[in-house]
Length: 190
Ligand SMILES: N[C@@H](CCC(=O)N[C@@H](CS)C(=O)NCC(=O)O)C(=O)O
Image (cartoon, rainbow, N blue to C red; front, side, top):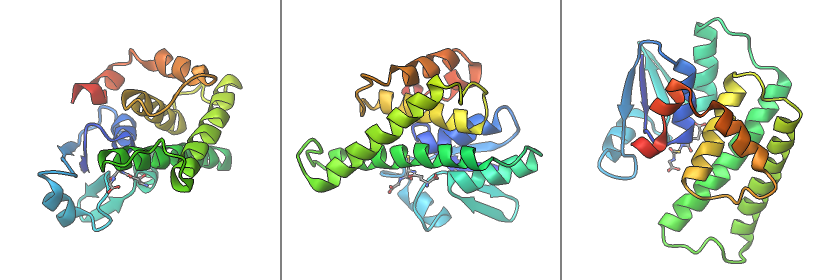
């Protein structure tokens, strides 16, 4: 099995954490730079992660997670867990948009509809996720918790979010910080 991704992507980190210590090859690409042709050859959607397992290619972290979970014989996610993932993905996608815009030289703090919508979505979803953490919804270390961890740690690493009022997300992150695999997949070490 081969996982194509990068060491900084929060979507790729989820899959690395889900795969744990199982035997697979990790291909670390610089998708916005020197490895873009390699990405073009592998995934027409031009996104990471993607998985290759024998003849089967799988795109998108959500689908890859389903594929791996099935292979590992894990229970499918409940509808409530699917909703948790949708909130996490919504925040993550908007945060990626803000980062790529800033890297394109755009001032994302301007009062523009497009950026206001992204910021509003990030705050709404992260406040909701913080309330879920307070209710104990992420107390088990499972795939939704892995995705939340990867999101929170990444937006903190990229300094994209003000955590005032949603500190329980940082406490959740800090509870898992010392895990060996968490340390090995830390985007700051890339
Ligand atoms: N829905 C996708 C999102 C993946 C995604 O956005 N990955 C980013 C890296 S963090 C990417 O490949 N971005 C490329 C681009 O936006 O051009 C998934 O869950 O795998």
